[in-house]
Length: 165
Image (cartoon, one colour):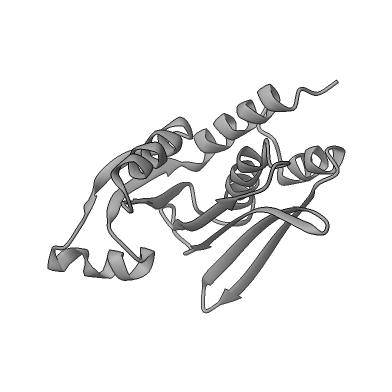
C-alpha cells in the first residue's frame, strides 16, 4: 500500500504533530516547505522546489531538531515524496549531500542512501559545477532518488518508529 499525503497527515496528527506543506507557484516553478511542529516548537523542516518534469524535484534544506523529534525526519520525507507523486509530474528527486566536513558528509551520504538516493557525481570547483554550487550553496555529492521508493522507505521507517495499533 502506498500511503497518501492525507494518510501521512493523519499519522502525524495521531502523534500530536502538526504537518504542514507550504507550496507557492510562479511561472511553473513550485517552491515547497514542509514543516513539522508540536506547537510552539518547530521540530523539523524541508525546503525544495519542483519543476514540471519527471526529474524536477530538487531538495535543498532539511533540518530536524529537538529532543521530541524521533520520527520527524521520515515523516517529512514521506510527506515530501507523497506530495511530489500526487501534485506534480515529478517522479525523481535530486539533492546535494553537502561537503562541510568529511565525517558529516559521510553520514549524510549514508542517510540519503537509506532513503534510496544514489550518487550521480561530485560537485566541486570545476566551471561546469558553478550553477549547481550556486543552487545548493556548496560542494558535495549530487544524488538522485526515486520518489515512490523514497516514500516506501520513509513510510517503512515510520512503521518501525511509530507502530500503529
